[in-house]
Image (cartoon, rainbow, N blue to C red; front, side, top):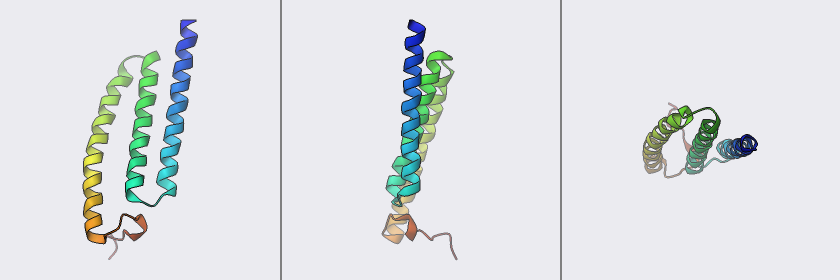
Length: 105
């Protein structure tokens, strides 16, 4: 009974992680606002964290160790990403990604 309950929790956690990841991908693909895309990328990273924690319940503690690495990458991405968005907003005065042509000559 305990093994079945653990499989149910793992399955439900993985299903929730998949749904969150899908929402994040849809937000990045559909929306053209840089801040919304940035938040959707954060949502995808959190979905991966949830999947790692769900797997760590049945496999071992290795998944939780990976969560710390993903959290570190997410924190660095948040700092650099927001700095880039602010710099682009000061230059272009818009956060719409259609107006970003900084790499063109």
